[in-house]
Structures are given as C-alpha cells and as structure tokens.
Length: 171
Image 1 (tube, rainbow, N blue to C red):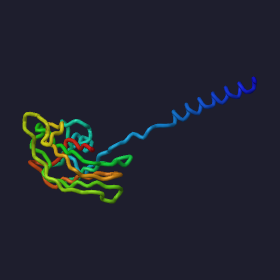
Image 2: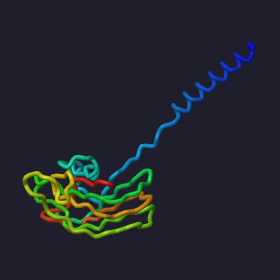
Image 3: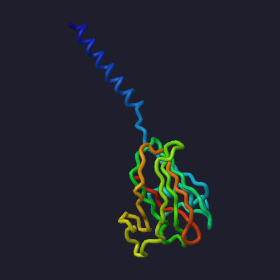
Image 4: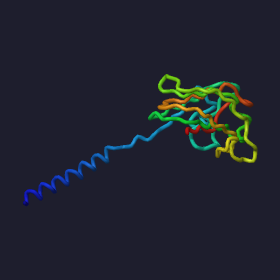
C-alpha cells in the first residue's frame, strides 16, 4: 500500500516535470513579415516603413525611379486581399501611380495584378478612398493566394517626384 502511494506520487512529480519542460521548450512560432527593397530614397524612408502600422511613415523611392518592395512572410500565409496606402499628404508630391503586385510561393507566382493608385485622399485627413482607416489614399486589391511566402510590389510609375507606399496590409 505504501509502495503504491509512493509510486503514484513519483508518477505525479514526473508528469509535472514533463509539463514544465514541455512548456519551457514550446515557443509558438510568431508570424513575421520582413520588407526589403531594390531601392529607397534614404534609410529613414526604408522598406520597413511600409509594414510599421504607422501611415505617417513611408517607404519612398529616389526621385524618378522605379523599384520593388519585397515582403517575405514566415511562416507562409493565406492572403485574401492587400491594402496599399499612399504616403500621407505631408510627404511632398510622392505617390505610386502604377504598380505590378505579385504573390509568390517560393519562386512560383500564385497571383498577380497590375493596379493604378489614386494620388491623394482629400486633405481633410478622412478615411481612404475605399473606406479603410488610412488618411492617405488607399486601395484594397482582391488578390489572393494560399501559402504565400513573398509579396512583390513593383512600382512602375509615380505621381510627382517619386513613388512609395505608406502601408501594406495583408488580409
């Protein structure tokens, strides 16, 4: 009887230890999105600005140049739409006019779409043209792909001195 109680107590302690070790070793994989670009006008206007959830900052290209914003996703994600927001009106005459958007899994293109973006939202700082919460002009693209590992947004032309994006939001 005493031996059985000791055995049950030992099993209980062992189970608690296993649970503690498993909890310490288990770290949920936090999804990440990392932005890189072919060009940026300066470090201050680097590609990470398009993913920082701050519409007052932006990734900007040098004057009169095309360029590509690449967003790497880990782990792969299903994308149902993308919202692209233009730089805020405080940024002097810089906005993307036309872009080629691609969703990729590895090197395979899952979906692509060419898009023309509006130059600016009204100066009252209201919502974007499609009802998003962005104060600058924004457009939501109905572009979708399963298991997307990279998003490429190639800025082909710009309004004003150069192109760029304030925010890219995955849906």
